[in-house]
Picture 1: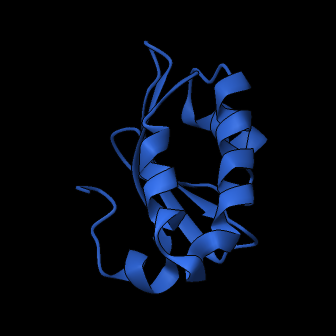
Picture 2 (picture 1 turned 90 degrees about the vertical axis):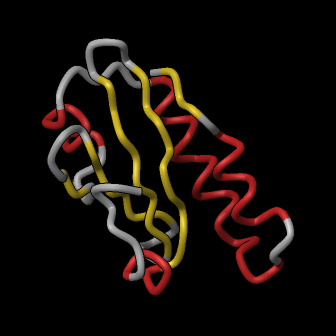
Picture 3 (picture 1 turned 180 degrees about the vertical axis):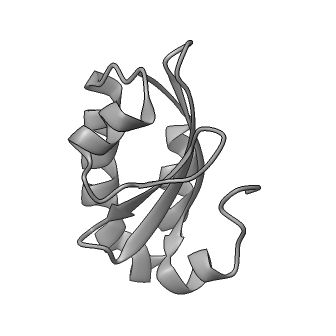
Length: 100
């Protein structure tokens, strides 16, 4: 899969020491996503059992033992993952994962 944009992940912890613990697990998720070849939400769910499937290609991944949430939109025919959001559960509760 092609993942756009890893800079969204890096921006989350770049200037905030309280989120530095997100770097290793988020980058581990990124490395897994880049190696994947998902053609459906079921294939994502098979690899990431704790992923929540939303409508229209949106998914929510639990990162760092469920401490952080990552929202992505996947274009399955083109094999592209668009990272839309990375944040804490409290930050996630303030957004609409379907439109972010």
